[in-house]
Length: 385
Image (cartoon, rainbow, N blue to C red):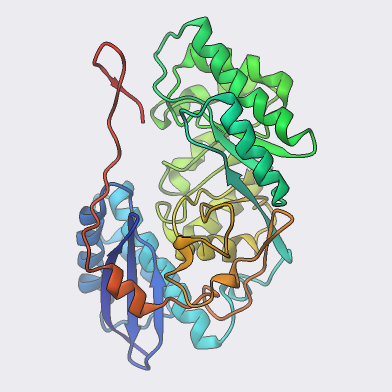
């Protein structure tokens, strides 16, 4: 069994999908993407597959991971690790299909039958009443966990009115869903250290599930001081790219939750290692996944086999799987059945889903070149997105 060919497909809304083929006809899929850097990652995937994988046995996943990571003198970072992530997902998909078992069986078997998922609420500029209405609607559909982006363009020193507005958005959500629901808050790295401290103090009475990215990853050395001053769990990780990036946060007891992204952190192999590493520090894992069904399936395969993965992000939409356009690229959208805020365990081989290759090919004929929006403050200076 050898890897014989690969193809890359850029498909809406902003995905890059990888297809790996083998000599016995087995096909595996992965999602290698840094949002806003699609063409750069595409080139990196091609370099890695053509330079190191064609002709190789796809079942030697750990060896291939180490080879792709160590083959360059310069390692890590978003581009290399995203390319490696998609390749790793496809290799695991191939191996699961080869042995006719879901990937979580190859990772040691399932530790849970279903996974709690959280639902994104509104957009960052929604007023409190609008976002509260979104929360009530989602709760009526059975969701028990939610996440809200707290602020948009937020200056290094903000006015009391801006702080009050941010807190009011969260308070409205908490009142809409009640105290039996989990509500996480994402600062998205848009908040400075002094403003983060003030916002967290103001949010504490409303019991957030966690505060995600209270600061930019460039200021990871300050996370411990944030954590020491609050009882709210501190989370981060979607812009960290390997266990080596997570190491100082865990050793310094600076976070209670890590949120690695399976498309950026080195795939299934590295997400599992980050989770195992975190477990040694009594830190929970909530994988970041704002992408499509391939990435979500890969996350869930790890989550079903990993005790300290406690919740899963998903962006398939409120009414998934019945009316989600993000599921049109797979043949069995009902693989993701959300009931009472949970998704059932995937039991099919490999990733547990089947990509509709005809649909993917058709979609890839259009132009897909999404870039992050650029935000500015009132004075014209750049704001964090």
